Length: 302
Image (cartoon, rainbow, N blue to C red; front, side, top):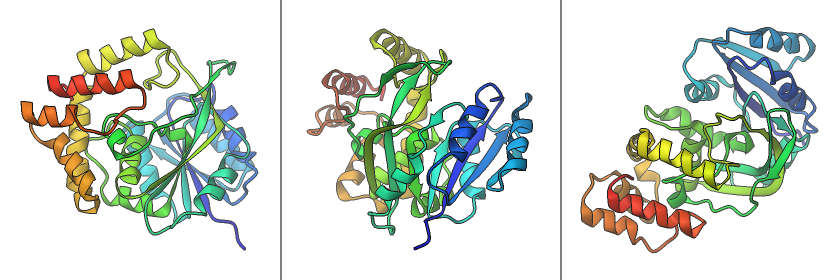
């Protein structure tokens, strides 16, 4: 039987420092029916030169030399411009993949119905900028549509999606989206399926200015949330993301998920805030995080 086709989607921007290490881990994958589609987002360093050098050595690497539109829109452009395949894998420019990452993903995904959007994601390990090991991410995950409304637990570089998921994304590319992986998570948790692999398959390179919460200690997480949710405008963006999602996919949701999205997209009222705050099912895995979210509901911040 012929191997399923996988396309790895990588967005690059001024990534010359770590790019070779990442691409090396892609071309060394044990799974062989892979194409690597890279979209450069207007780099001014040697990123494109490095990619072209790999193209001369490997016939499965393809480059889109684009203008700067930001990494979120860059990933959506990759999805739109990719050829037909069975599965698609998001890839950042500065991590390192374990050699069996795609092989394991395909084995998991091949067991699931292809007529609905499906998302596979694995666990990951944290490394510093010099690729010194820091820690393994917590293996226990909570993933469902409720959770997808308030956070994204499926990190993009660990994700592999099926063709049906790609179809739903490119048919309704959002105008308001915090992250491409978050939007993907909402789709697959809302009316598809998610499969989780607790094996760490990505060496996640942590930068001091990383925009994600993953791997932060308690103090760093507190400061991050103050900046993002109290000082910054992330909550406004999240609300716009809910509205975009409702407009695009409401009819595909179950009755419970329709009720949830309506709770989150309605204009603030104290009664509606109470309905969210006292919703009987957990939004976040940790109790303190779940309580924090519900307080934000009551305050009208989320």
